[in-house]
Image (tube, rainbow, N blue to C red):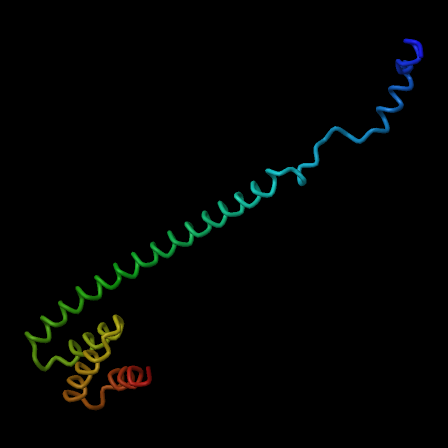
Length: 137
C-alpha cells in the first residue's frame, strides 16, 4: 500500500456540510445525565421544606392568637370573680363567669357558676340554654 491509499480520501466541503446537516443536534440529553435526577429530587425536597416551614409558621401564628385570646378571657374571669365576690347575689356576674369559663373549656367551673345563676333565678333563659349546651357537649 502506498501512503496515499492508507490515508482517507478528503471530502469536499459540500459533502461535509451535507453530513453535518444530518447529524443529531449537539444539545445534550439532560434527563439521561447522572446529576439530573438527584437535582430534581433535591429541588422537590426544598419545596417540601419551604411548604412545611410556611405551614409551621401559620400554625405558630394561630397558636399565638389563641393564647392572646385565652389570656384576655382569663383577665376577664378575674375581673368578674372580683365582682361576684363583691356583689354576692349578682346573677349576671355568675353568668358572665360561666360563659367565659366555657369558652376556655373549664366546663366544671362553668357548671358551678350556672348552678349559682339558676339558684338566684331559676327561669333565666340564657343560663338554661348555656347549661344545656355544656351538658350536651
